Amino acid sequence: MKRRVNRKVVIAALVAAVVLGTGGVVVLTRIAADQANAAPLQNDPSKTAPVRKTNLADQQSVTGQLGHGSERALASRKSGTVTALPKQGDVIERGRPVFHSDAKPVPLFYADMPLYRDLEAGMSNGPDVKVVEENLAALGFKDFGAPDEKFTSYTASALRKWQKALGLEQTGKLGAGDVIIQSGAIRVSSLTAQLGAPAGGDLMKVTGTERAVTVELDQAKQRLAKQGEKVELSISGGKPTTGTINGITRTTGDPNQGSKPKIVLTISVDDPKAAEGIESGSVTALFTVSKKQNVLAVPIGALLALNEGGYGLVTDDGRTIPVTVGIFAKGQVEVQGEGLREGMKVVTTE
Image (cartoon, rainbow, N blue to C red; front, side, top):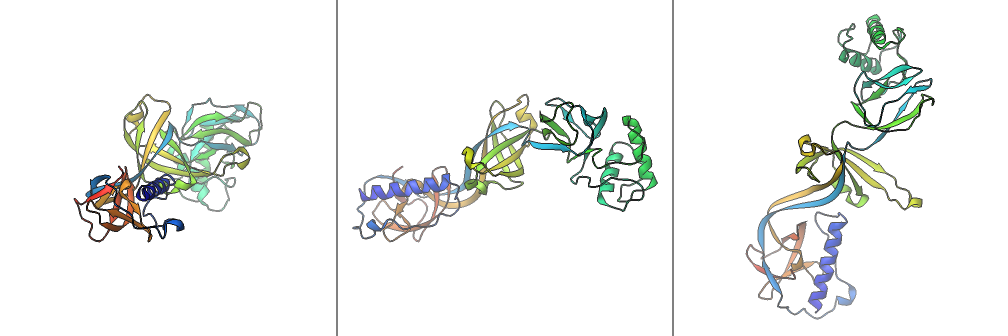
């Protein structure tokens, strides 16, 4: 009976460790003080299982949602009044209007750095000049040659031609709020501003345009959040595929609302055809934390908490072999111990 109790303690603790995401190597612990001086355990004629040499992968499965990734707020620094807005679901690419202020378009430029000053002749060199020239060149206005950080008369000429094409006043200057800067094309997920509102401020919430899976993790599972890591995806109504973690954000939570801090992952879908025809839906994301090859493994139920501390395995002939444990995978646990060998039979509850 003592052995059964000990095994239950071990299994419960190990399951808790896996669920909480502690993963990897489990720290050996001592059993409760009231068991420290217990009599030697008698062998219980339970089931046995062989010690196997196998490959193990520490994996965690989490449910996510298929969509276009996490939303982000988009704001404007333009003066004036909002006179036109896109529709929810619209995709906006470089050079196209994000919205209209005072009946004039405010187009989208691609860059990772926002404009931080007005651009005009006589200004000092800077990376913001190169951002504008790169976008003008991509739109076909290349008077200045190769984009660089110098605002020249050729830069002003290219700006005037671009402004003319948009029906704007041809000043050869560009205010910091005259364009919206984003890292790439955007998809409008919801509108914040209304017609007639001031143009400066929050306008809408946007996402990327590629299909993506959003997964929320508890802080205890932050070990799963690794930029660039591959994830196995099972899309409801779609085909199994893989994804790549390309976005990690953190939410603070609100204790007053009972919400806890979360880690939000954006996972790009490697094969868009796997989600073809599916606008949204549930996705099972399988994270592989670590892998081990050619290790000895036994069922978790074979582990026994020892009176002297640590864990052990009981062989079918009644011997106890102290072991250290490694990763867990699908009910199996990696074990190492002196005298332990492949094919040996050990007592287990499973």
